Image 1: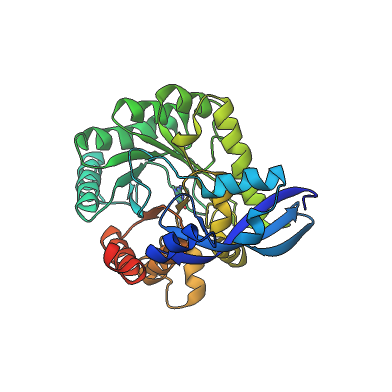
Image 2: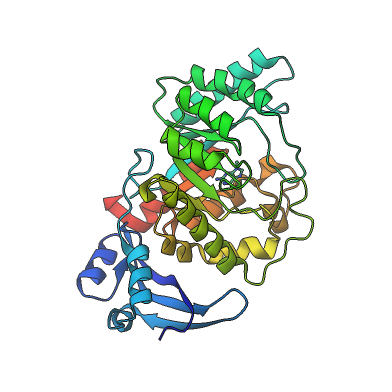
Length: 355
Ligand code: 9MG
C-alpha cells in the first residue's frame, strides 16, 4: 500500500460508551487514547506537492501489515500522558493574558501588572487549567519587543501568580524570557515560532524542563498575512510540526512534554484555516496533544458581523467545539467562562450521563 509518506486522517467518530463498544467489537479504534473512537480513516499517501487519498474502514485497516502505516496508526491511537500535569481525557482551557501596551490600563506598568494578575485569577476561577502570559503581541502586523522589556512586563505577573491553581504558560519566542519565566514559576513554554526565532530557545526549553507548545507559523507576525502560500497547507503544517517535534526530542525534550498547534491565523488565508479545521484529526498522527487557538482570530470575520474582535466569541466557541469533536485536547481562549459553557454543553450532549 505504501508508496511515499503516509498520513492518516481519522473519520467517522463515536463518543463515550458507543466508542468503547465499537472498539471492543473491532469496528473502531481510540483517538489519542481518549473517549472518542474512529471507524474509518482517510489514508493520504505522498507529499504536499503530490498525494493520493483512499478511505478505509477500521476493520480493513487492521489487516494492513505495512510498517509505516502501523507506526502512524500507533501514534494516532496511543494514550497521551498528562501534559503539564493535566489529564487530557477532557478538554482543558488555556486562558489568554496579554501584558502588552494595549492591555488592562492606560496607566503605568504597576497598573498593568495588577490588572494582568487579577485577570489571570479571574480566568482560573472561570475554569482555565492554564494561563498563558504574553508580553509581546504576535498579532498580524505587530512589531517585536526587546528581551528586557518583555521580561519586565511578564515576570512581575508570574510572581504575582505564585500558588495559583493552574499551570502557568509563558507565551514568548525568546530564550531569556522563557528562562526568567521558568524561575518565576512558569511550567509551559508556548512558542509561536516552535523554537525557530531564537537560536537559544531549544536549549532553554531542554534545560528548564518546561513543557512546550510548538506552533506552526509561516513568516513573521509583521508580514505573515501578506500572501501566505502552500501546496497543501494540511500536509505542510503536519510535516513542519513533525520535524520540530523530532528536533525537540533530539535536543533532550521528551515527547510527553510536547504539544503541537497548527497555528490558525499565522500566515494562513481563510481557506487555509478552514482546511486545517476540517483536518484537525490528522494531526493526532504527530503522537502528541493538540492545542487549538482560534479565539477572536481574524478569519472569524469571514462569517459576518465580527469586525470587533470581542464580537467573535460565538465563532470562537464554535471553533473550539469543532476541534474538540475531532479529539483536540487544549484550547487557547480569551473568554474562558464562555468556552467552558460551550464545551460543557457539547460534552453533555455528546457523552451524556458519563460526562
Ligand atoms: C500566542 N498565541 C497567539 N495565538 C496563538 C495560537 O493560536 N496558538 C498558540 N499556541 N499561541 C498563540
